Image (tube, rainbow, N blue to C red; front, side, top):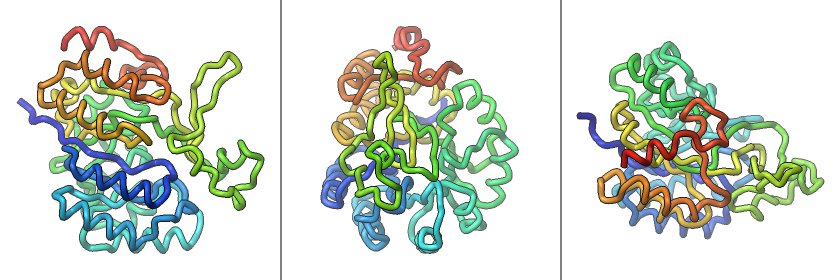
Length: 306
């Protein structure tokens, strides 16, 4: 029997005020998540939280009993960004999530986490990074359960597997800021419009289908990815950590639902029903089943086993 996965809270992907962010993490202290990822991963212009602020927050969470992981940017473009990255990598107290290969190089020889944007698609890459110090890897969000099963069979000893199991999917990054462009603003004078969209700016197609969300330089799914009904399958595959990505509202309730399902106190069918109204648009899980990402494949079949 494999042990139950631990719950992790991923980094906040959106731009919230410093006061909102600190208040959010004060609430997280009282939740059952064991691992908390903090730091800016999307845009270096989101600097209401400075390096010292993030480290102070890390200390607060660590004293509350959380395992803290500092996160790096997924797309670095300036020396100032590299300077912050070097400081995080050399912090000496907390594990670091590398979100690009530049961070991997700086962390070489030390334990680190490889984020989903490092794009680990096969066992050879896992083996290479394990020799550099990889402790945990986050499966790329577009991979599915069958691919994960194959990679778990070849996973290096001592390396943990984490799966992004809830949240709007981070699909792509660009040097262009799409939120600024939506307001006819240049990236260098974006006026910090991301602050107006605490869950991203949802886009609709001409038929009114909501299919993407803009989050600065990051493009996300409009629908919320949920693998709540796949927790048992992940346990069978030996997944060590299940990641919940924060949203502007109801994150603590989402954590509670996942925790109760992991403990067997809540059936997957009932948990899915409770999650649905907490999502900005609705649910999807297509990637897990090898289908289009915005689909909700095989949910009924999975839930019937609960």
